[in-house]
Image (cartoon, rainbow, N blue to C red; front, top):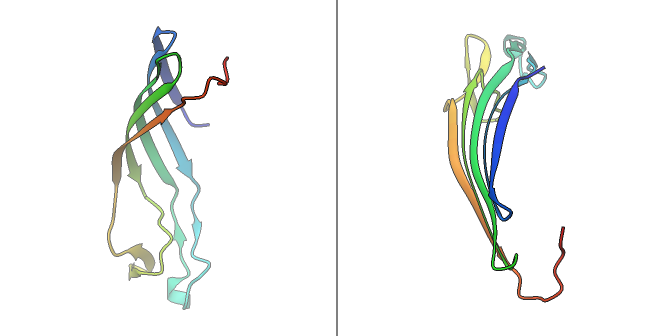
Length: 119
């Protein structure tokens, strides 16, 4: 099991904000594409803590939708499948190591039709 917690708050029927935190993992394994016996090694479990903050909103009688999300992910033992790697202590390792990812996403959509879906 992986923990996850989230809260959302509806400011009014058209605007909702949320925040969440979760832990995830991807199981370890072995390098099945090794080119030699020296590269045939195991790798450990990947773990990540990810945090998200967002806003969902509808405006002008649901004719305009504005959504925004910001996120941050902190990895340990990040697994990256790549053919451009070097071998460190017998383990294929990406030539560049990332541990954190952060970013944002936004979306805007509009509708001018009188025939709109309603909840």
